[in-house]
Image (cartoon, helix red, strand yellow):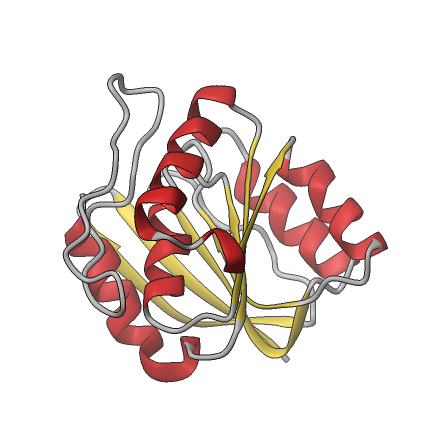
Length: 183
């Protein structure tokens, strides 16, 4: 697993020693960021279920101004912090330990808003539906911003709140990436 392009291009990220964390593959990540393109430059990004920090650090490397990483696993947060240090991205990142669904309310209470939210939860546990509802309830995405959800093809997205529209859905084997735009 590596940073594909940008200021940390080629940096090899520390990966988990077990299968408790399922990092987004480089092939899927490259495709995802090709779709996003230069829209990532100068943005505020939230990486929910951060795991290794793979998606958030790729966004930072490509020009995101600020990245917030959230995970409730102590082991995952150690990986995220290690990778932030390797990338020398400490000044532009924040790491939060907590349940992603609950952290959304805390971020909203602090007035946080994001241009991009990456949501890559454990598969088949109903988490995408919970995250979509909470992000909509607390207006965490700016108008025109994106909630990008990585999920199993066996887990459908719920009926979307009116403020979101699916603008694209890509399939990579068992994985789907759904791009939801805030109207």
